[in-house]
Each structure stands twice: as C-alpha cells, then as structure tokens.
Length: 162
View 1 (spheres, helix red, strand yellow):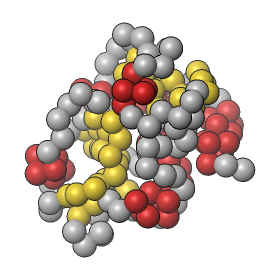
View 2 (cartoon, rainbow, N blue to C red):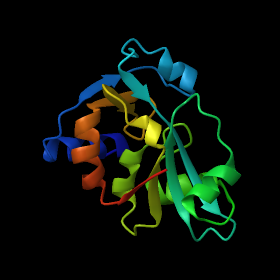
View 3 (tube, one colour):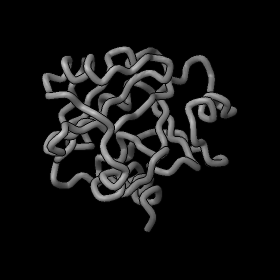
View 4 (tube, rainbow, N blue to C red):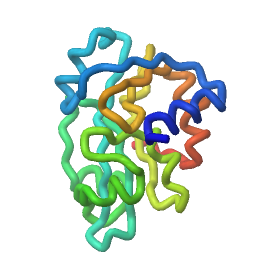
C-alpha cells in the first residue's frame, strides 16, 4: 500500500471526517493556492522539516504560506539550538515521503517519535485546513475543529504552538 493509501485508510479507520481531492502534482504553494477548492475559508500550510546540526532534534514546523521563515527566530521560539532544513533523506527514512509532499499526516510513520510537531499559532483560523496525504497529487481538507481535536491527537505527537 502506498503512503497516501495508508494515510487515507487510517483516516477512514478512525472515522475522521474529511474531504479528499486528487489533482495534478502541486509542487509549490502557488500550485496549491490555485487548486479549484482553494477558497477563502481554506488554510493551506507551509510544512518544514527542521533539525539541529547534530541531527538529534527534529521538528515538523507548520506555518502559513505567506509568512516569512527565519531559522533563528523559529529556533529561539522552540528553545532549540540553531535549526536548519533536514536533509531530504530524512523525509524518506522518517516519514516515507519526498520533498513537496511533507505533511503532519506523515507523523503516523514516525513510530520512534523522533519528530516534534510545532504549529505557528496563526494556522488556527475559522474554516478548513488542507494538507497533502504525503503525496502532492492529492489534498485532504478538514474543518479546523476536526483537525486539531481529532487528527492531531491521533498522530501521537504532542503539538507545540508558537
């Protein structure tokens, strides 16, 4: 079963309400924001896998697509030594996905709990929130309430809000 199929099966098994849309590969935030269901009530997120220099601390940082990202600021807010982008092989090894498909839903594959989940507080807005199911040819939409009350706890990673 593919990573996408595994995630979708997990959502169904947990009876988590969601919308599912397949589409051409969305490689950039601009691609995502041009999808037909990219309405004003849908929050698309920029998802970044970060790590410290020693590669002993990993963070999946979820923020808004138009928000500037400064590693020093985020590192300080997370109370971690200077963070940088994790190497591409970490995406494959730890989350079973490739660049352009990173999503909090991939944390279901982090059985060793090596990655901390960190949200920019501004992603919590009225309406819906959208993520790839670890494959950039599909998008899953949740209400914000369902995502934070059902999906996030099911991921098994206690979130940090900064």
